Amino acid sequence: MKRITIDEAIAYFDEQCPNQFSRENKIALLSELDEYLFENIIRDRENAPISEFVGYDDETSGSQELLAPFLFRELYRFFIEKSVHYANRETAAYNNALAMFEAYFENYFSWYNKNHKTASVKSINI
Image 1 (spheres, rainbow, N blue to C red):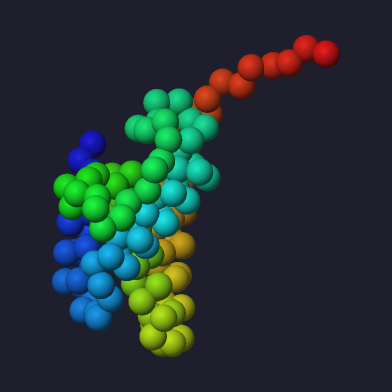
Image 2 (cartoon, rainbow, N blue to C red):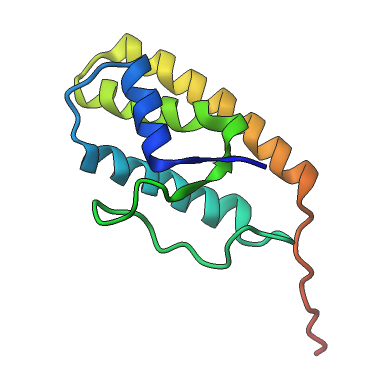
């Protein structure tokens, strides 16, 4: 399944929501979201695409693939958008972007749960 890259996510966001935020700030937000996805959804599942998450920074290649498939690119867009609106104190726009992010997050979470079983846990006999 095709994955969206850092460059694609940033370009898509900038096209949809012109802004003054630096590329470095957007990469930090993408890293924050992917770390959250890894720790809370991906890590303890079978066939996880990665076994550990190290994060992204301004040294990370723009061709680095993000964790969610291209199908869920709006997840990244609305995560950055809500953060930009929050920083700009645009309450109504923030609330709208947050609601959209939460809807896309729930869709991603449901899709991932449906397609990836929880990894086996070894039992401990006492």
